[in-house]
Image 1 (cartoon, one colour):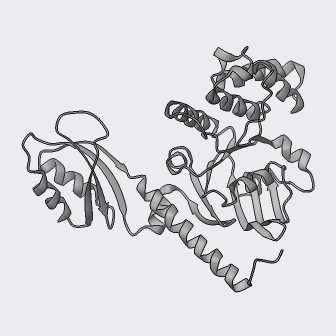
Image 2 (cartoon, helix red, strand yellow):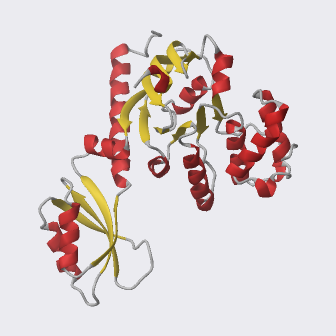
Image 3 (cartoon, one colour):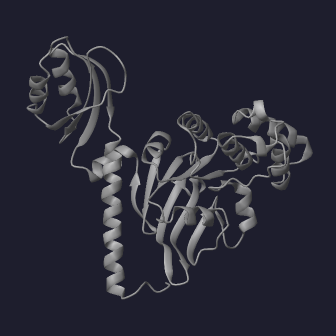
Length: 339
């Protein structure tokens, strides 16, 4: 990866609030066009990291570059490269959606000739056409989040930073927001902060797990699962024959080579003679499990990796980080000294 491909370069970043270490040592790079999930428990350092990237906070020490530009030496140039949606969108409720986006474009340097066209483009991209002339004060929370993303991308930034973009949304709005965020990938590099496991899994190409102010794991969901779990879990939906002996069926699957356990789950869909169950494996034996089901006359309707894989990784990593931080604090007496 060349330096031109690196949108974010962070090296040995520390941030202290008095004597309390919020970040450090934090190091990672992000390539152009990726959608990155910054995953961590509340207080892990996610928002502090994003605020430093957005030039809203100064680091205590270390190096942070966005598009090759240092956030300390030239913050104005960095801000021009970034679109930022904090956890509370920076909106003016008395303005209409169109007025606000024109204002956001002007302060980001868009000229009159391109302003109208670009505002219309982001209104279409974020599906705000139905409320373009409504005052922001009258909008639902979901539409306000969309306006927040629209203002973050109106100047075509290289990097889009979203802090908990689905916070407070209902299930339908979450799905819509997920599709919107995915649509930003490619033209923009996107980094999303969240503590919601399923959302990071569904939306992001790569996951950075942050704990106690440092990166404790880095990779795709599959890579993290392979690295931190002894096996894998899959969820299967299948249709069985009427009157089938399910107790014998469960026991037969448990005896398959490579299968550690099987757990029936609540059905995810309505239908006659449907089974939903989770199979825990010590290695990838999905083909033999499916072959067994078909041989027994079951119709396999769905097979997918379980979200519990990511959940287990997250819990293991977060627990390990907390223990390491506790041991470090005990060894240091009261707290860490500023590097």
